[in-house]
Length: 356
Image (cartoon, rainbow, N blue to C red; front, top):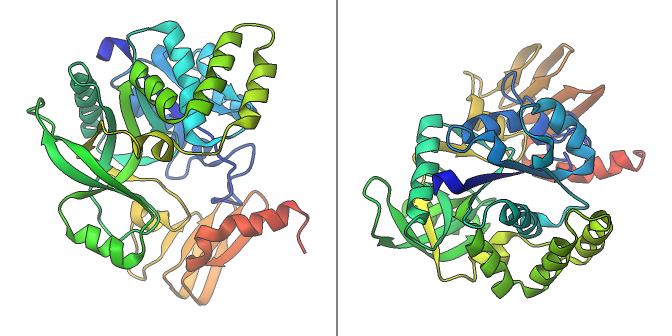
């Protein structure tokens, strides 16, 4: 299936959880959080080890198109697919499948988020290649699983069933059950068990399979996609797309298809993965110093512990503080307790309304 493989990178998002560095026009995927390259540039570099750039599609919002094209000049202009509004991953993937079907009736699709951090590029490429080889002789929906390293309550978990025969170099398992965001006690049980994985949100399937699955399990979405499909390339395309998307339910492909399908396979990953959900992810990616701090940019501290400090272009000095997130970027300053980092969008909403 490699010669017929397409990659779809989902690059939506409003940039709330990494405010003030991120914004509506430049959200997380387009930021260089851990180096000189942005997260979407890193994602493109990883997947093009397996799938060429001419078969790589970027699905994004209109507001993000200029920055995406500036950061990814090697991607053909017609490979950027603009959603009229965000409707979660089921609509995003369904729309991408229409464009792929127009190009190749025998296509396979690999779906990636634009804002994940992955270590072990060779292992990642090998896993994706194994998925495509598997699809050549199996008709499954594949999700890549991550072995839990902590009792994480913010991720979805998959219970693994029996092994599926057919791949000597890479094991595939049937997905028995999906659990979304368990409580800490339940997450601890999953951590100690051998048959649970985090759901990474990295998928692979035949394009025909995901279309048939959407038609079976999400008929309202499929009907709308068919109306969009009839308009592609016409003068009515933008109008039809906006009309249909406005009626689509906000639902993920996980809820809409994977949790209903009896033919879901899980491949445990051999690479490192993090979805970089909030500022606290910096602790996992960059590691802690002797005082349990993470610091990027200019920082001077004394009696400072357990803090995450990010400075874009100013000196940040801390004295006698602990367990804080401190971010100086884009002419703004954020100070919050680490426990409140997942709720940052609440303060962003206040800022957008003009503050107090």
